[in-house]
Length: 186
Image (cartoon, rainbow, N blue to C red; front, side):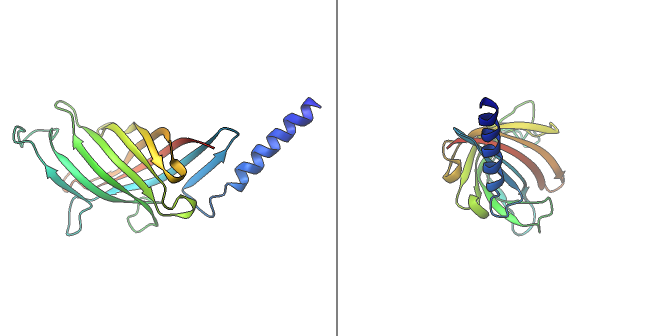
C-alpha cells in the first residue's frame, strides 16, 4: 500500500509538471508542488547606450568623480531594456527590464541593480520580479538576488545568474543572458 501511495504521489507530481506547459512559452518552466511554485526563466537583456534610440541613459554623475575613473563610480543610469528569447535583438520580446543601475565600486566595476523585470508573454503577462543586488560586471558569470515580485511572482524569492553574451566597449551596448530561478507560494 505504501508503494502504491508513493507511486501515486510521483504520478501526480509529473502530471502537474506536464500541465504547467505555460501555453507555448518556451523561455520559462513552472513546477507546482504542494507548498510552492518553482519557476525557471531564460531570456536575454539588451542594454543599448548608443544610437538614436538608446534603452539606457545616464541620469546622474557625481561631481566628485574623476571622469577618467575606470569604474565610473557615482554614475547612475535609467533603463527600459527589452528582454528577448534569444540574443538577437530581433528575437521575440517577452518583457522589459525597467529601473536603475549605478556604478557602486571605487576599485572594481560593480553595478548596483535596482530593476523590475516585467513580462508580456503567455501566463506571465503582467507579472514581474524585482532585483536588488550588486552585479560584478567583469566576472564572466554572476549571481544576483531576487527580492520580490507581482502577479505570478508575488512574494518571490530567488536568484538570477547572468553571463555577458556580447559587450561593445566603444558604445557600452551589451547583451546579457539570464537564467533565473524563482520560488513563490502556491
